[in-house]
Length: 480
Image (tube, rainbow, N blue to C red):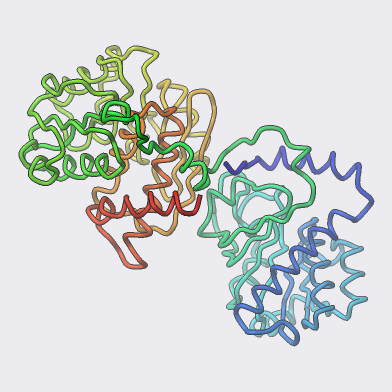
């Protein structure tokens, strides 16, 4: 798993490392990696490096110093470099001197438009990880003129480093080069960061356990249940699906099919859409009521069951079965409106809640807000459950404080029924006995990968998403 640390902890670790490193060594090390990435982007976009034009937007902090030193390194490769100093009196002295010695230009803000408009690449060194809020008007005006790809130093300026939130003018980067460790912004604001490149500077030994995690494909391959010679349908996991209705069977078909595609050992469906589910997925054992479903090792409940009396009784019955439960959609709304249904749950029985922003508001009485990690943690603690907060970036929080972030592969999952597919994946992994936090995080990753494979750069449907799950799992195992 990739570790992610808050900026407060990054700064503390940097202070420890700086105290043991010769003056200026870390900045030069970081800047050399930054220059290499800028040169690589130049070569990709223009076919060469020498003779190309790079503009540095330089603020007053260390990120501005990184940009200036990188400009000096780029000059050695024949790049024409011009630096725009937003606060000349606070520019990093050593970095500025290095740029001037190398033959780089320093241009005024008034003269900068002609340089920015002709640039092949712009380097964003405006603010660092200590900054908060949108770009100041002067910087925002310069950024608005940019047409070339932007390489951000550590993070795109104007994007919150710990939440990924934006609140006004900001930089959107094609590539973000960060140093030492990943910060929350890199996982939570992929659309602003672009491709994130980590340059090692020796920081990791000075960092403790990460604040957030991001699963890699090798992690998913290690935990996803694959049948062995001694396995049968029960050791693989039997998952029950309580979803849909006779009038609206789609949720039942999608959630059940997702569990089948996820290689659950057996899927039992219970509900009014039994005939439709059975006709689409003949391998599913389908009955009309949860009381007749038979033995299962985990339940998925909620999509399309309604929020009236029948839905409440279904949820109450399932919560009382003593097996892990993934509660989604209507089940989330029922819990929000009639929380006493949770009295049927054994406190030691795992529960996964999967709210989108509106359902979160019902559960917690307010919207998630810009700090979605804190919001998910708060809900997980309140309900003593794993909370998977849906959104462009999915945040998975456990009651013990662990948080995983799934950085999406595009926006292909913004389609009706996509959430039903995700619940089927989670239920399948819960039935296999996997830790609920890990099950939700792994399911979110495979869900995202399946969406990208199904879409192939054009919008897809939830049915296409279900059909792409085997391909996603093959890719997981092949890459891992």
